[in-house]
Image (cartoon, rainbow, N blue to C red; front, side):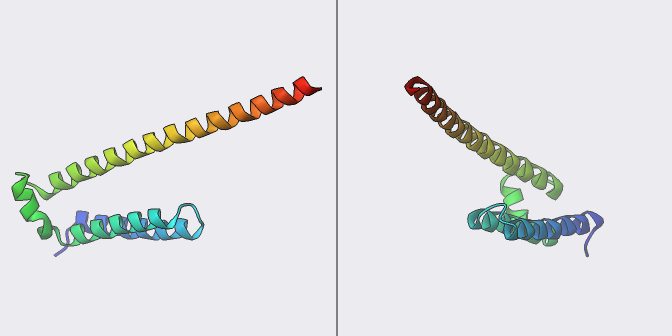
Length: 114
């Protein structure tokens, strides 16, 4: 029997699967990102539909309630995503800085030649 929160979780997973596919078709991200997000939403859908599959892991980690497990797992995944985004942003900032410097030096050299 599905409970109200499970139904909401299943709907959320299905909507996110659709949005993942939609954004992939619009070329908002690549194939690897599409696969990663699709796997994540399918796993969430599976775990929400059949929460008994994680009871062994919950017993090992000494977590009493399934909701607590999902909150901890969500927080962990969220932290990993934020860290990855931070690193990506730093790399992008560095690339932009190098590009701007190169353009500024070229422009300066052109002015000096005149």
